[in-house]
Length: 482
Image (cartoon, rainbow, N blue to C red; front, side, top):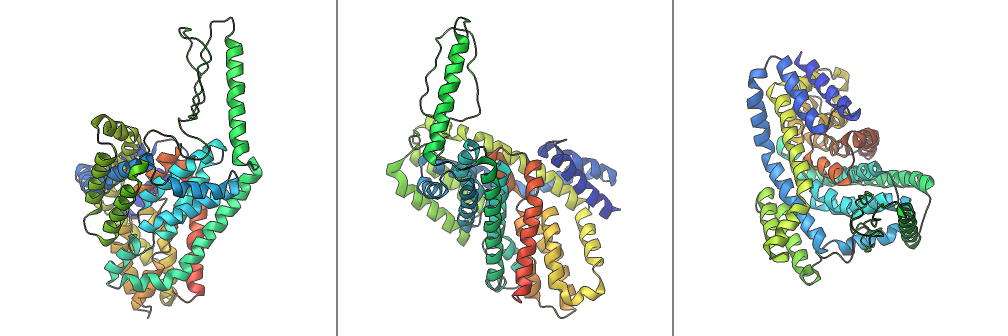
């Protein structure tokens, strides 16, 4: 019964958010609470939620201060040279922009943290997608898949968990998998190219100068229409589009009509980042670069817990770059929306994971899946593990899969002569899909900053990410790695 209810709960959650019948936060809280009552353990709901929140609290703290830290680094211009280089390559060609998104996400993923990758990638690419009216789910999907492939780095998490759970060396898992993972990354780039060509056919190609000229012309036409409409009617101030070029009001004060609104943000030019924003700190560039390098090194070397590192880094970055208290408050306020959205999602996800684990649903689901593996598949347990890793790492946390399910699969494989290392290598192929799981906090950074509905992202990315996982697994089998 718990097995059936577990699958039904997950399916209900996914259907409701994909059909936009509930917001992700509401679904993450209310659906598991309802099913907790249905399994007869409603009295323990509080314990399950508190335990789930306790488990995810360090992650929430890390994300909160990471958003502030990298938000400040973006504000002060640390990543401007990288962004300009990517954007020079992209021009205003939708195909190049999508490929550039994949390349940027893959490069930034080298630090092993998905939240960092998504913050930098979206901050750089979002203005281009928005100004050229490109599909934002293409951006989130490509970034998530590129990060998912790179998430298999030994310091990224899954490989380390597999090594710990099976008591093997992380290098022995990762190094032989490099050819298969390289094929997976090439497939993501090829997919980005195909999706980019599709966007190019839909939108056409402009040069940067043409795009900016068209944008300026549209502003002028809008202002002319608004001024003409207001003549003799007592109407309206014509406000500029907010592109940071200093458009002046066309009407006089005291007309009583509201200024026309649009969704373009100040400084949101086609080049991605306003080169004249007042938060730039060019004299502190090398200090910020060194601070970020030390922070990432400390994270990789595990000198301190990651939440502590980002807390210290955020405090130091704010103090040095914005020594005046009002400026610090302004920077925190500027990133407060992202902090609140992400932390809210994390704590809501704690309810979902807490109920799944506390009621025993996840254990029964795993036991049912393992128990239904045909005996004839025993000698092919590495392949079975790779296939199972795709849905299992989507529907449960990496901790649940690697510490709860993987040892059982490895034991079954050993009984049929399949080595533990082969099982461990196969277990990481599901990561391109895992990075879009509703149980991964970083995905809420991605969709939140990109202003994309989580259901829209899920609908778009699942098929492509699952295909990427199968490509990695197929390459691993072809090369004799698993």
